[in-house]
Image 1 (tube, rainbow, N blue to C red):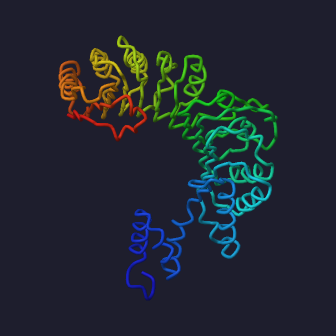
Image 2 (image 1 turned 180 degrees about the vertical axis):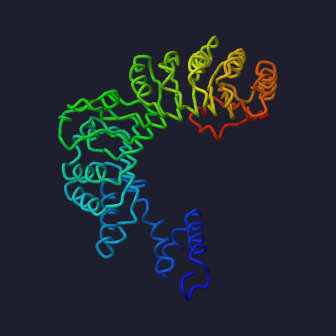
Length: 417
């Protein structure tokens, strides 16, 4: 306890943390100016994340530059505040020269930042970014403390940019395109060898250049040997070699999340099976209009393929959005493969079926409830009778006209064991 205080510092910190959890920033600002006992913890929350975006503004670039200028003025007066900034979100807009300079100067003050997200509302060419701003961004992303880097909706992004990001552990790439107009043979470049998490949830044009790319010394730009979490979309069969390139080099992969789109199949994704010896969690979201003869896109066959080499799988989550009437034959195959000796450590199995119907009011949700319950009881009896397995499932019913509604807002009929 600090001399002269009425409560331990731990309780003070807990109180301030609760205020931040409730997003009561006005109170946090007041407390930070009240006592030194509150100052550090309040600043830690207030300045941890800097969003330079243009929400609710008709002139985006001016809005972002104004925010940057206001913050820069604060840092000039109190330089130590820059040490609290750890996360940065920037909407890359059509900045003029003055705005570029303001934002670039602000970025040069950040020395403790460890997470950076570059976002564009609609795809724009990276070549249009002013050299001064590009240099300032590179300074941030290539810093020793940078761990998480996210790119969204950026076109013509140079692969050479990644060659010096040797400390990145989490990489997120959504809806981008890649070009490589620069040599990767610089003596100062290296592989992103500490990569633990890769998110490619939306396939990006040319991403195979990054996944398979190598420097002139032969080392890969992305080293997947320490990859533990992978999130990816499977958009089409011609991307299969790229997926295999990731998976066969990810010998320590623990969590795999895949979104399987129309016209795609899981057949061959889990080859070689030895690459999945460490896999513990598998999450799949399958195409909405599946083939009634193979509703899980070859999943059961692939699980059977890796069963002999993987004895660590603990969790399987399956989402099946569909416009078809429920057919439950696939549950028999799922039961058969998951009762093989290699899956004795399976602790959680969750099946989510999203029914999309044109006439929402006329769909009998209670009937769907009974159908799935009877089918699961009959066809997955061995899984149901395994005491160590938490086997749960539900049906969600949604009208076609609201297909963009998030899953958690659907009318849901839960059928849980």
